[in-house]
Image 1 (cartoon, rainbow, N blue to C red):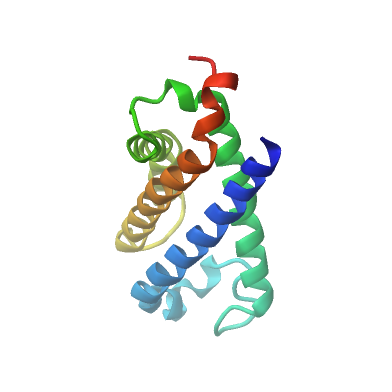
Image 2: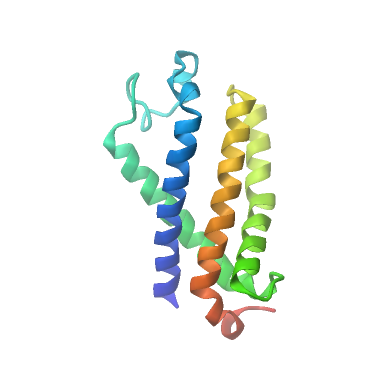
Length: 152
C-alpha cells in the first residue's frame, strides 16, 4: 500500500510538471514581463532571466510531495467518492480537491498578490487539469485497496 502511494505520488509529480511546462509556455509573456520580476521568488528567478536548473528539481520534488499527499488522502476518503470505475471516481476526486483546495487559494492569490488576473486564471485551469488527470492516475493505482481501508 505504501509503495502504491509513493508510486502514485511520483507519477502525479511528473504529470504535474509536464502540465506546468505546457502552461508556462502559454503564459510565458507574463513570466518575462519585467513588471512582475519582483513578484517571483529567488528560487525561481535569482536574477532576471530563465529559472536555474535547481528550480526544476524543486518543482519536481514539491510536485511529488503534493502527489503523495494527494494519494494518501485518496486512500482515506476515496471509497466515499461517487463513481463506479476508477476513471469517474478519480475525476470526481480531482474535481472535489480542486474545488475545496485550489479555488480558495486562487481567490486569495488574486486579493493578495499583484499578478494579472489572466495569469491566475491560467494557473487555475492548469490546476484543474492537473487534479483531474492526477485523480484518475491515483484512483487507478490505489482503487483496489480502497474497500479494505476506506471509511465508507
